[in-house]
Length: 110
Image 1 (cartoon, one colour):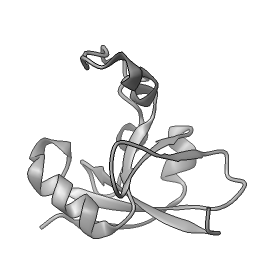
Image 2 (tube, rainbow, N blue to C red; image 1 turned 30 degrees about the vertical axis):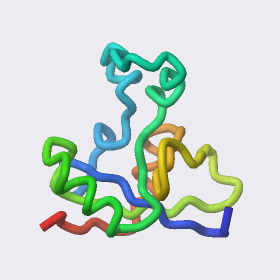
Image 3 (cartoon, rainbow, N blue to C red; image 1 turned 180 degrees about the vertical axis):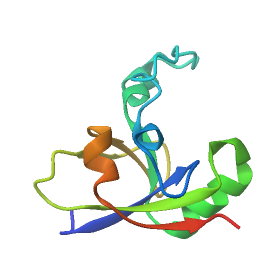
């Protein structure tokens, strides 16, 4: 990973809260995807490699949120990043407070 790297997460609030960085699994949401191989992703969070990718996804799925948080992840951070699902998509695992503390900016989806 490049040191540091900015990843982009769709969030519901500006400023973001811990809830914006809490996984579905940690919130107690049941896993319902038909593909059981995706279960491990349930405990992580979806991020995008560019703000434009996050914006496109946010416009497609309006219920995900109205803002895009830029999160700086440096080498050695207590955060795991893995490229998953498709081009420009990442799953990120880490404590909500660690992710929120690395938020370096928020933009409206528009």
